[in-house]
Each structure stands twice: as structure tokens, then as C-alpha cells.
Amino acid sequence: MVIVIFRTRLRAGADQAALGQLTQEMRTLVQTIPGFLSVKDFLASDGEGVSVAEFQTLAAAKAWREHPEHRRAQERGRQEFFSSYHVQVCEVGREYSFPASEAGGIRGNDPGAA
Picture 1 (spheres, helix red, strand yellow):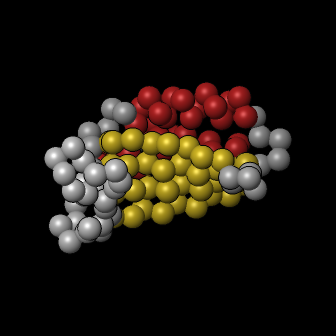
Picture 2: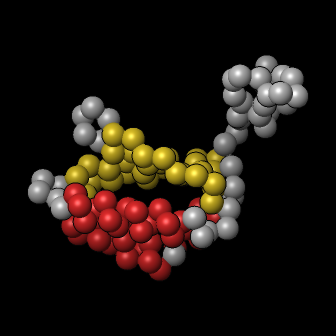
């Protein structure tokens, strides 16, 4: 699995309604990318926005990065909405969760995790 972390800061006076519309359009579009799993957004108390997207593979994440409509949205973000942003692309090396799965034990991709 690949996780993409997108951290943003808004420009002063950015049109938040237009950004919300563009974000919704991109949420709809990313769901058409084979290998896309999920995306969630968070807002920190200091105003930083964080989006966490999950993809099955690095190729799926790259397909999203290169999608022509997403490229146009990226440019709009730089020109109209964001004073700064930071992107991190991370491959999951270990994963587990609580509570235990119904099959018994911890669910995850690391056989040594317990």
C-alpha cells in the first residue's frame, strides 16, 4: 500500500467555496483511478490542512499525480488557493490494527506483528 500525505496552507483571501468545489470534483475523479483506496481530510488547530490518500500501488498513486484534470487542479492550487504545500509519498512497511479481526489475532501485513 502507498500513502500520500498532502499538507497545505491557504493564501489569505483564498476563495474557499471555489476550493471546496474543486476538492469535490477531485474526490469524484480520484475514485476512477484503478488502485485508489481512500482519502480523508483533516484540519489542524493551526490552520494546516492535511489529506491522506491510500493507493494499492505506487503506479496507482503516480497515475493520479499525472492525470490531466488533476494536473490542472494542481496548477489552480498553486495559483489561486495555497500559500504552500508539502507532499509525502510513503510505502507501508508494516500495518496492524486493533481490535483483533473476527478470525482471531491482529489483522495486518506484517506476520511478525503482535
